[in-house]
Amino acid sequence: MTITSYSVQSFVDEQRKFFASGVTKSYDFRLQQLKKLKEAIALRQDKILEALHQDLGKPNLEGCFELAVISEISYAIKNLKKWMKPKRVSAGIENFPACAKIHSEPLGVVLIIGPWNYPFTLMISPLIGAIASGNCAMLKPSEIAPHTSALLTELIRDIFPPEYICIQEGGVELAQELLATKFDHIFFTGGTKIGQIVMEAAAKQLTPVTLELGGKSPCIVDKETNLKITAKRITWGKFINAGQTCIAPDYILVHQAIKQELIQEIKQCIHDFFGDSPAQSPDFARIINHKQFDRLEQLLDSGNIIVGGKTDRENKYIAPTVLDNVTLNSPVMAEEIFGPIMPILEYTTLDEAIKIVNSKPKPLALYFFSTNSDNKKRILHETSSGGLCFNETIMQVGVKDLPFGGVGDSGIGAYHGKTSFDTFSHQKAVLSRFFWGDLDWRYAPYSEKMVNFFKKMYTK
Ligand code: NAD
Image 1 (cartoon, protein in one colour):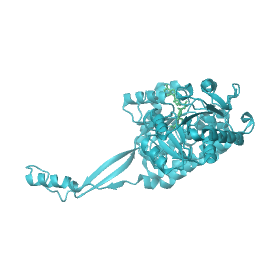
Image 2: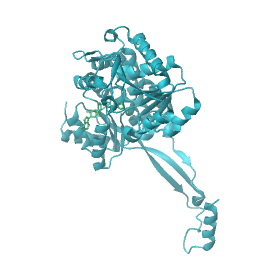
Image 3: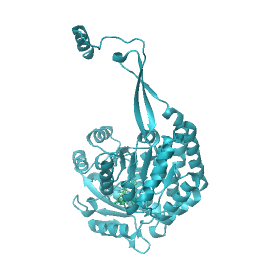
């Protein structure tokens, strides 16, 4: 269903009225809504897994990663009181006697636009933050995952009135209508190019944005590593959801001394995970649509296929594929792959690997497999990325107290846990003074004595 700009505006007007009533601000209200959301999701777990399977052929266990939002809600419920509590800070000697506090206040009416690859989680997870922070929210799930979009719509409309949380299904046209409307915050998850469009539209309204974008997340493998576990974790992280994960290891940069061994281990892992014919495996997802399938199929020519390479357009299947003899100029290295294709490039010194990573836009995630702590320190200090993971892939996303977000081209802002609460709140600075103890030192006529006092005090 597409709604007209008039109705987008009328929904937002209703939400503004509801927000202005102050109802959404109390601790009790926020708590009740989080509980409602948790219960509604818990009751629909099987339906959610089914919708994800219909949209992406997502295996149930991978669907369960999306159900992890339930524990994210529990975490918000548990910590809400603490998060809402004003934080006292020092008011400084200049203000003595006084009290200074940071109050987290809701932003108002926020817009959340989601992508298709984790279509359930990536709508609900920001919504948790929006509710916990006391906002009204307008949601637009991705039209590219229609079963999940329909299910989200049913779920949200079942439990929330539209003047509080409103969900609208639609594509680009609806997104543009929404972006032409004034919101108090826009939380967008999607590709970098659309992120630019969102930010441009937001700038016109001076609306703050959180942009959760993508890009190429490198995976560097040092010669000092546990090869078997390295291969297992990389293979898993690359091929879950058929590679359609924003933080999937995009390409592998391996030390040339162990390249062949790593390739053998990865080959073995692919076989162990998906058997002789991954097309028959219930544990391997499908490409979302033919547009993505066609884009990915062309990338298979970017190097020598040493594992996989089989495709079946009708079933939107691309086998887990490993590409060798890929250069930095190959088409597969030009853009985020976002599919089950793993190019393997080699390096000879860590300087070279760092230089390659730093020559590209800052990634959302960077993975480094090594047992050498000096090398780990170098990666930590000499590269920049949204998140950094040593000896693991993907799992950083589940650590509730780690902020999740990009840097540079991979995004602006972050969320998860307390960071979500902060993202959807304004940190209001409140200084309270009293009428007693009104010292005269700052009122004219100014004294030279005070000038000397401050000069000394500031340089202490
Ligand atoms: P996308 O940018 O194509 O679409 C995202 C949303 O934007 C959809 O709801 C879509 O309807 C809307 N949209 C599309 N065109 C628009 C336009 N012209 N104006 C306004 N809105 C528009 O992204 P996608 O293909 O759904 O998802 C894949 C991308 O998202 C990848 O780059 C991936 O890395 C990234 N991603 C990032 C994260 C993260 O957390 N950082 C998570 C998942 C996906």
